[in-house]
Each structure stands twice: as C-alpha cells, then as structure tokens.
Length: 126
Image 1 (cartoon, one colour):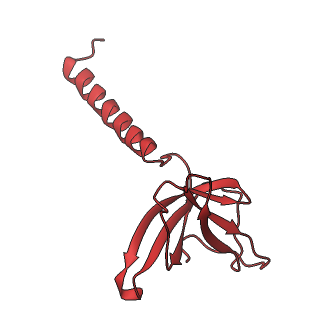
Image 2 (image 1 turned 135 degrees about the vertical axis):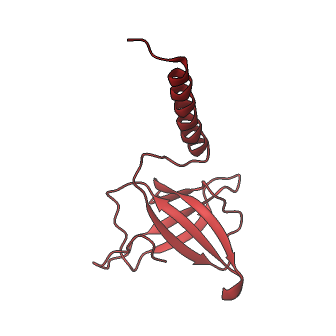
C-alpha cells in the first residue's frame, strides 16, 4: 500500500504545528502535560516580580508565577496569578504568600508560609 504525497505533507504539517505549540509553551515556562492548580494573590507592591518567577515553600520550588495584572478598580493593587505544579502540595486557608528577593541580584519569588488550618485553598482562590 502506497501513502500519497498529500497525506505525508499533511501529516508533517500537523506534527510541525504540535511541536511548535509545545516548544513555545516550553520556552514560556508552561508544561503542556502537567496538571497545575491556579491560585491568585493581591498585593500593594510586587517590586520586580515577573511571570515565570518561582513559587516555593521553605525554598522548595512548587510552581511558577503565570500572570500579573493591575487592578484599577481595587486601588491599583496588583493581582498575581501563580500555578502550583506539584500535585501533592495542599495549601491551608490561613497560609501567606509573600514576595521576597531570592538571590543577591534581586530576583523575586513568591514564598508560601504554610498555615495550620485544616481547610485548604481551592484552585482559583485568592
């Protein structure tokens, strides 16, 4: 059985598009195949925090900052969206997410201080 040239070209184009999609997301710091949970934090100042900065608990990386938005309707506070990529991490509702410098060069990251509450934050919560 012979495969037509049109089929080969179509198959190659579909594979190329899939690889390009995966590659672009990989370069942006997004893992297409991971199941991540999205959370939000509202801050007065973020002092240089940027998308793709780390999110950690006690220095252990658990995720990445995904997006940052200004909230003009909320006194120009800043909404930070971060994704937890580790499925085993549960965050109690009384936990705090603080922004701090992670090295001497001034890189920022979000550090989560785990609380003691037995209720856990749900994906999409602030």
